Length: 170
Image (cartoon, rainbow, N blue to C red; front, side):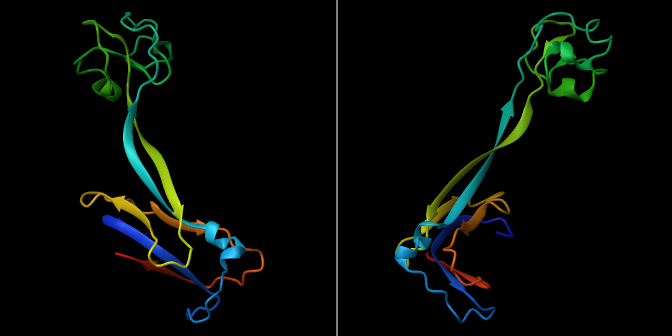
């Protein structure tokens, strides 16, 4: 998909053609194995916050971190030496979590990451009544660009594919 998709995305079949005008359809028999190899997939992205394991939590960290607040290896990878609400601390301290004292201490700096889950199904079965369906959020971001994909493997002697028609169903 070249644009975000909102709502249902239903693919009933995929037609392959050996010419640019989409007039010379490539016949794939159910015994060729192609019906098990052409598929649609839906990749879902969700945001998650991950935390590194804090080392030396609750311990005064300024001296051990070279006299400077902020990211510090002594606090553990991706964590920082910060004081809750201290305006002079760097940006990462504004994002920090897990304070337990009133001074500078080792705390977690969570990072937002995208988690990906993929689901898919075979769609080249020649039956317009069967379909692969992906549900995209009806509002907001929907399914992101590139989240809905077609792919597959065709038998070795299949002519070169020059046109693909995706048959959608409602």
